[in-house]
Length: 248
Image (cartoon, rainbow, N blue to C red; front, top):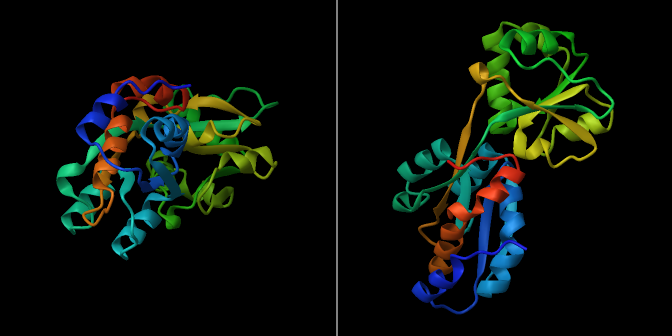
């Protein structure tokens, strides 16, 4: 059980009846939310309804007027939504950051991804590579497509790309539909039937900072602020690390 030491202080600061907090979150941060959820609900009495989607899809849902209390997205997405008045600008709070990793089949040898050239050769040698379809608005997919361009292998990768419309790219590896998967580490680690091979080399790594923001129209503002304070508590670092994220 995760002991959320900050909650008693927050309850004193925000005494309120039990509420249901609607949270929209990008998939990379969802595991952290789910890990602390039971303790949060037990200690506060609040209920949390979690929905996840790609960053692009969630941004569009917020723009279209979907009701929510807290949205968790990359900071760039939140800054754009704040400029449009769709989230409360002064509420944006960093929660954690995550980089892109590589997953292969359990029986596969360790791929050479320690250097940029090793990664490049590994990708060229792979029969198929699964990653989030950039068109779907997934943060990691957009970056992977840009990475292929940066490495000068975009044309070679086109025929061997297994595009995933949201969800977990590593599931394609588990089903034998792809030889390897590239996605944010927290999502790769959700598929235990594959081997997490490690992170992209530092020279071509891309970290995404996830942050939360309040809806200007939230009807559960005090409860939502309590949740956001817990998600930004340094005490959650063990959960972040276990799920493949780091403190922001």
